[in-house]
Length: 66
Picture 1 (tube, one colour):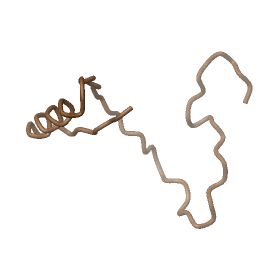
Picture 2 (cartoon, one colour; picture 1 turned 30 degrees about the vertical axis):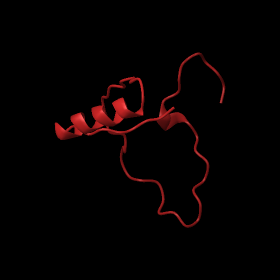
Picture 3 (spheres, one colour; picture 1 turned 60 degrees about the vertical axis):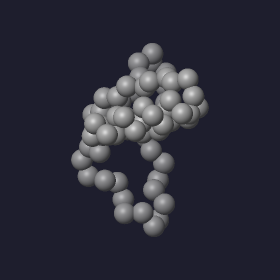
């Protein structure tokens, strides 16, 4: 792919062939717009406490460690 200075749209990026045992390319657009916030905490205990508090408020959370 030639570099033009613009980021290509995902529909314009050629994909490798799918393995023989797959069901094929999904129909339509699987992309679902999402919004999120990353909060940096001081340690694992603070992470657990924050996760518990947010999930108690019925918020969908994911735990990340880097």
